[in-house]
Image (cartoon, rainbow, N blue to C red):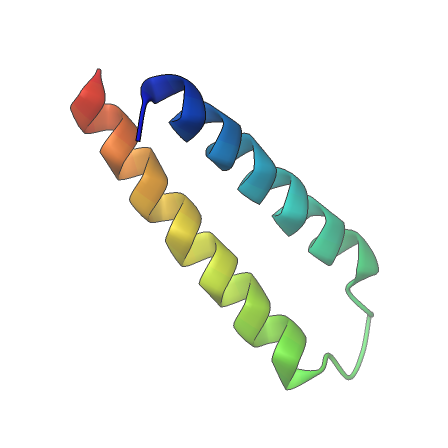
Length: 55
């Protein structure tokens, strides 16, 4: 994955995480939302590590 593509994917994941958090209810969060957030955060962490190695 090129550096430009990597930055685009990181930005997309950050936006998706932000959108999910905006929809996050104050109470009774569904398990699917928690799982999705964890999945997105793991992907973002991996891409950031990859980006650091490419610099």
